[in-house]
Image 1 (cartoon, rainbow, N blue to C red):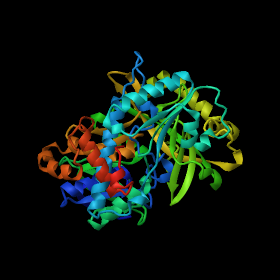
Image 2 (cartoon, one colour; image 1 turned 180 degrees about the horizontal axis):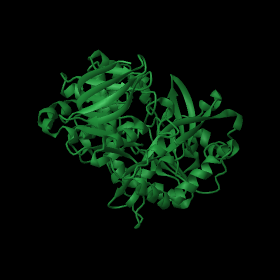
Image 3 (tube, rainbow, N blue to C red; image 1 turned 90 degrees about the horizontal axis):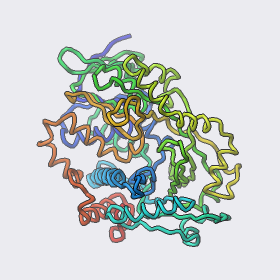
Image 4 (cartoon, rainbow, N blue to C red; image 1 turned 120 degrees about the vertical axis):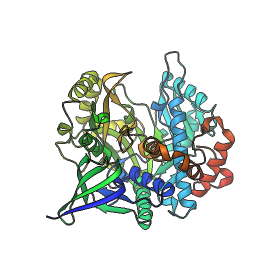
Amino acid sequence: MSNKQMTSDVILIGAGIMSATLASLLKEVAPDWNITVFEKLQSAGAESSNVWNNAGTGHSALCELNYTPEKSDGSIDISKALNINEKFQESRQFWSHLINSGHIDNPGEFIRPLPHMSLVHGKDNVDFLKKRFEALTENPLFEGMEFSDDPEKLEEWIPLVMKDRDVDQPIAATKIDTGTDINFGVLTSKLLKHLEEQNVNIRYNHDVEDIKRIDDGSWEVKVRNYEEDTLEYHTAKFVFIGGGGGALPLLQKTNIPESKHVGGFPVSGLFMVCNNPDVVAQHDAKVYGKAEVGAPPMSLPHLDTRYINGERTLLFGPYAGFSPKFLKTGSNMDLLGSVKPNNAFTMLAAGAKNMQLTRFLVRQLMLSKEQRMDEVRKFIPDARSEDWDLVTAGQRVQVIKDTEKGGKGTLQFGTEVVNSEDGSIAALLGASPGASTAASIMLEVIEKCFPDRLNEWEPIIKEIIPSYGVSLRNHPDLIRDLHATTAKALELTDESEAKPV
């Protein structure tokens, strides 16, 4: 077994949407840098970025009720929704730049316009949704959103959901036509194909087994080359760990202080997929509801039109599953192996503080198909069991860490960048909104890890993402202009009809 030794300026671990986005941005600002990407699977975007392994929602807070919590005084906190929407706008601008520059093509293969809706039942929930609608539509980021509590109007919007429904309690929905459905697997493949044309070295069937700092301050990664059955050692001054759920074990191997007292809990997602084309044809939206009490925020039930491999599909979920693996292609020892002396108490504290979540997961695991169909019928009253099949979606690892606000063992919901103090290594942990805000998150990595280059790079970044450094929520004219130009580039609508997302 021979050993190879190679040096790059940058090493990226994982060929998913995050690494593809970071590599694309770095190639724009530092085209001469030598970049190497390692992926243990045989193709790009095959794990967390794969179309079956995520919801495909262009997360921009248009329909996700967990981004707009109700405060104790009854008002709606829209700060997180504004933040996520602004970040999604940066992704739209980044993708539009790639299209306009000829770096990628055929945007319809990865992004399509699709109405985003929120649907609630019961007087209290209807009151909440109306207050949410009023709060959001005061901001131009949410221009074009509609609200209705009229069953006849809802029947126009969502005929499949309203068909044969006994409206014995208040019901309401919001709808905005400029939402999107996104195939992040296809987008990732397009990005990496262009990067290969720019001489980025993308190594599939290469599994990073270890990471350590060497004497000159750079990082050495130990890589298993499955194609040649050899071990390789690669060094770089900067390493990004973008391996989805597999990022945490690799971060722990770095031994940087920032990797201590951090744990992770794996959660698997399950979806019901409709196999009846006649039913699929009756629905054309992403419709999000409210999570049940005790459910994690990422488990909002939703009935989604999706476009998978060019075919229109209908999915309902997610239902929570459990596997000790951190990746679908991972090991059953992943969870146990991630418990270290420095995070054991953090993990135990999280378990003690989240008994309600544990009970929710146990209940979910015990559901029969008919019980899962009962959940589907809350959205589609006359859904037939024979029209639906169960599919296992992606693995997500929720971050557990000690925080000042939440105390020891706080379960984090969202996406988080962890980097060394000197900026020489960074890792991405967490889940939704993740892929939708990839451009913004990778800009955060650049800001944290290359602060000495920002003055040089900022003009280039602003050419790619014109709203970079600007709070869009306070610039309605800029929002409308950027939405129109990105809608045109991404072929989402006629420019004259474009409305802000």
